[in-house]
Image (cartoon, rainbow, N blue to C red; front, side, top):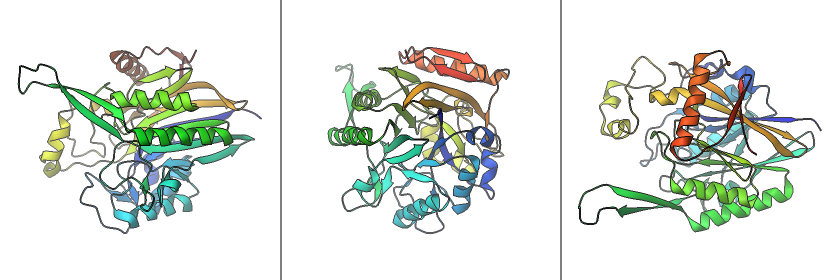
Length: 372
């Protein structure tokens, strides 16, 4: 049947007149893939009204969908905390525009049944199913039986006072998966595995901007998903890289970071309470009013996850280090570039910081994940 190449990037959110510029430095790599995945972080619509619960948001147009397709993408998750930013009209416009550009859309739908349905792509006789969910959920963004939205994978938070005799001291934070959502996710995986050779699970989750730290529920959900039959976990939302874990021989990318996210900054925004609250989460984060990429220094480093499928199974997993410039363009790096080593060292360090002692081997311009 021949090898099948799957490439997966993180968050994408064009906000410029020519969205094809976003992918100029990465398109040649993405076009090599049989399946190329990303997470859409904005609506593609000229209609709708911004919902009051939407936080920072912008919107793009059908041009962005065509630019994503031209760059090599053919599979998009829209399951995230921006899917309903512009209401139902914006939500359905986005899905229609992605589909008009011949992009498959995962994790969203007119109701919960549609949102939970897998996208199945058949490549040279091998079927790959992709399911997508979000744990980052403004009110009413998740689908229900009679409401559009994304497939939810909610989590509960518990704050434990550590020093009971010391009022006001920091608490220990515990999170655990929403029982019903986790049961539904595991059921979806089992059903997908029954009709596909490989099951990929995309999860919009985790703690944004804080280096290395994972929430408890992330490992709980990821391990349960693999136990149920998932072959690869692709995480995003944190806007910075997080560690890579191997569990039962399967790779878990806890955060693919940003990929092509335009974010302008004005002095007014930089002085706002909302920005000040998140700015403190990541060391060294300073606004750059002349840049299209206003994220923390750690967010300059990113990667493209790479999986090779052969004989109906994933036989090789790794990643391609990349770096994002001030114009919010990701550049895939060659091994001789000092930034190549910077990304590798960072991925290894943030993994060790949370007790993920995954082995990596550099092979050419790729970093292999040791899964056995």
